[in-house]
Amino acid sequence: MHLHAQQSHPPAPLLTLNALDTLWLQVTGTLCNLACRHCFISCGPKNDNHPFMSVSQVAEAISGARAKGVRDYYFTGGEPFMHPDIFRLIDIALDAGPLTILTNGILIGADEAARCREIFDSSRHSFDLRVSLDGTSAAANDPIRGGGSFEKIMAGIRALADAGLNPVLTVTEVDEATPESREKFRTLLAAAGLQRPRMKFLAPFRIGREERRGRSYERFERLAEGDLIEGEEELLQCASSRMVTAKGWYPCPILIEESGARMGGTLEDATRAIRLDHPACYTCHVEGVSCRT
Amino acid sequence: MSGRSTDTPGSDRFTIAVFGGVYNNYLALEAVLEDAQARGAVSKYCLGDMGGFGPHPDRVFPLLRDHGVRCVQGNYDHSIGHGLDDCACGYTDPRDNHFAQISYEYTRANTSPENCEWLRALPPELRLSLAGRRVLLAHGSPRRVNEFLWESTTPDPFIERLLAEHDADLVLVTHTGIHWSRQLPDGRGVINVGAIGRPANDGSTAVWYCLLHVDPSTKDLVHELVSVAYDHERLAAEMRAEGLPEEFVETINTGWWTTCLEILPAKERHRSRY
Image (cartoon, rainbow over all chains, first blue to last red; front, side):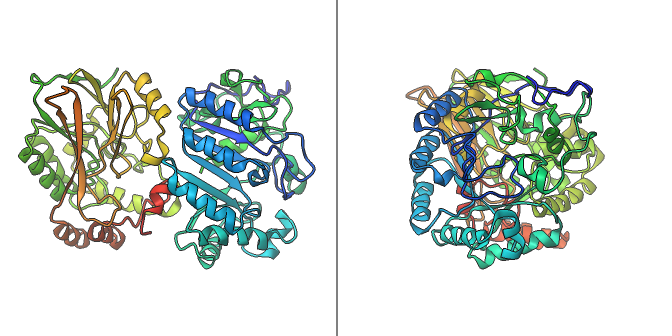
């Protein structure tokens, strides 16, 4: 399995799947109500490269994962709340294990937030929401996530807070990553009613639309055999997770639009070892990135 | 497997006590040992993490040894024993790591070389055969010393996988600091015994441990999660005297965690004060 085979580079490390702990589901494919300039898979309203997953596709993937003893589930997209059957999908996942949804929050109004709260209270498994925002003001956020998005996202966060939920704010640090810049997000969340702020900060992946906004990977930004430090094989998320979309199975949430990354049409296809030869693998190595919360 | 040992108590009428997460809290350890004795425990087991958080690390070890407690090595014990730079607790938040480092450096500076050597020699797991069940005692999870097994993020299929992969019918762990248990329909399961070093983030100053008995009628294992009160006010005073963070003292005095909050899953965090 080669993610991005290039003969001019030395062989990349081969990583076996230790255990399938986490299943990612690209429930709304590449379709999103935003078109963020740093998106590593160029999601947007017109990108249907990966379409919505059907309820039966989601149920089948989760059933297979359950049989393998998967520990937790993540929904992402695109924007998962665009899916017309999103609450049915949530029920299916939470029956099998804990679920986290990565959302921009724009489609979460008072009704959706109340429903999420009911689910949160009634499920035996943890149900978590991660809302993405990239600046503490419209001036800082909207150039990346789109005009007017700051106010819409904050409305979603406030709706969740009003329902008594405490979503994790996810920030991709494209320009600034300092204690001071992070503290501003804490203050923002407190003002929105979240007195116990939960946050996750991510480094950008220089592929998809981010490659055009920022820069692409340099030639040296590749992994070669021997680059992984002791114990890292276990920590890399592709050692213990896989991604499924309507089009098949992939090593991780980052690479679903990259040529050669598709592992096949079944979960069994996706249990093979992978060669960490994509430049994005370099970011996971250097930054210690995990898409998990 | 390295570190594996098997004990089989001679009688089918017995009680054993299993606790973990001592975190230097020698006063709670005294109270738990006394409680277990009063409840008829014939053997006592500790699932590791002797240090961290509380005062006077070296006061824990004589109690464990004098009472014949059989111990598993936790991540903290491995780090202190080997003189590593941090506790390898598995926190991801900078604030949590900041406070973890304060207690780690205090514990490292106040643990004698003899006790470090003792910690270094602890096994990573213990195995028992109880009432026909294969019982595995580990620190975090059977597969990783610093894996957190929380109630809301440990689904049944995952438990089944852990039991199958580690040849066990019952696994007892600690590491999270919050006690819970799950029994599968066939009677196998997982027990997180919680921690005796600090309260369970529930607004009570008591700490928790586990008793295992054989049910006289079914002849199968049954467990009981037990809370124990101890002189937490004395502990708080000693923590202050040692210059430990007021945030830790508050937890001892109120039963609510003030640190290590970011590792909590959404459901467990929702029940927190902070």
